[in-house]
Length: 249
Image (cartoon, rainbow, N blue to C red; front, side, top):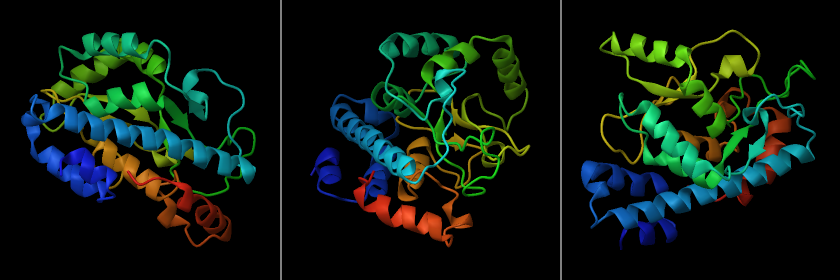
């Protein structure tokens, strides 16, 4: 079977992606690319579906989302923007001197949109689940706006001065900042030197790729920090109700 047939047949997604990553540059070869693209498209279609389920189940338990939005990144769920293609093209131009945007992020913005399941601690300071690390991916328009600033250009210059630093796009606060506690650097996706199917999701726990991070999020119903509080009855009830409804990625 090809990749998409394996994926649709129910084979473990991590196993399918392991073989896709092993192709490296050949993943973009015309022999493989349509097959690889089909898998990623199905993955992000499932992510969008799962986020909708998780959001509704959180609403059902009166989870406190933000209701006042200073930007699209504040919205719990944001569908793909109508001008996503144009914004991605603009983003690619902005980062061209430093590398390439992974295909995974581009498809996330085209198929999923954005999400922010962070508890609204300004409305209700007592969090339901501490260190839950709720899924949060910045909206495309806000990302483009930030990358166009002097602050981002200065950040890139700093990265290039150190051998162990790589240019990246900041997509989410770390788990401490999400709890309104001063924390570490934001979770970011690597800007790769060449075209890539996926890339490392930097500064997040688990040392994995962007798709790997999303898989962990889906396995934990949107809260990759679940191991810190999984014994809490409120989360167990939420998890038992929600997890069977989610599609594996």
